[in-house]
Length: 170
Length: 188
Image (cartoon, rainbow over all chains, first blue to last red; front, side):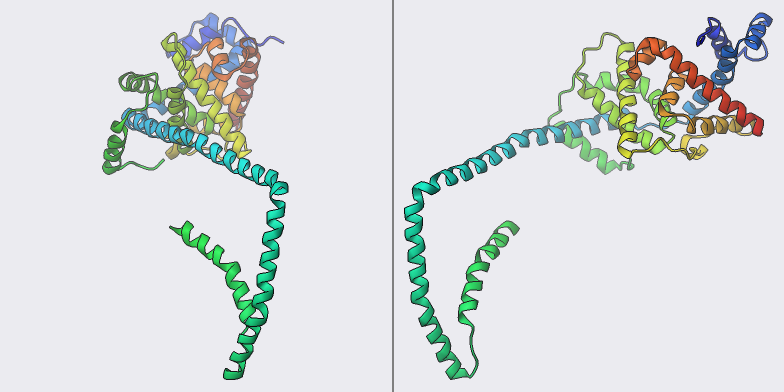
């Protein structure tokens, strides 16, 4: 398939010089009438050229100074983001190391953990009857039951969460 | 793109003078290059995307990426080709992200700027309708070849296509547009 004609440029030159379609050489006109490729060029080229010429008159682009400033600001923001990236990576690595170290230390620290857990259990066993006695005494005085144990447990659970939110808000 | 107020400009100036980010091109050279190329580039982007607003955004983005490219340009033509290459890639990325072809809705005269009436307006409307039905790659090829008069080699460099492929691609794009334009003329 023939996709190119050697006379295409002649047609484009005729369009560019304003000779097309009235003042072109008869020989070129005869060629265009016989050549499908040049016929397409003769249809397309004048329309696009006119669109270009007329369109450019009305194009409004921002001043170069604005484009320069915006580029500067964007570059600075990207530089700041790029600078912050290693910090985030370092923090992530530090957390990962901490977790790994904790996991590795569990077998070594297991006797201490077990001892601690036993102490906590003893403390709970010591507190529970006393707290129940206080609750019962309160119920005798006021005629209503005070759920001290659930209240104390809920406080212990919620306190760290509330503390976390209070600190992150700041 | 939002219009800038004087206060915005003052703020921008204050922020940029704090410490200028180093681009390979200095401001004076950039402004001269921009003044030589911005209107041509905007026309290209507006015709290829069919959306003047999008063309505004892509214009800014193109110059930013151009400034960040840090390429050693051998000549003005090389620099210009690199600019259009960036713009073409941005157009392609934009449509890929949106997962749509460029708008088939024709851009209005108000959007793209109309300066004529009667036959001229009709001819421009015909072209816009026809362009709207072409693929982005065809629009790029035709605009570069017939509006900017780029050589096959320049078009290949801009679009990232082999030079040997341009003949065939251009032939097909031209044939499609010519058929569409003839169709519109027959409708009239």
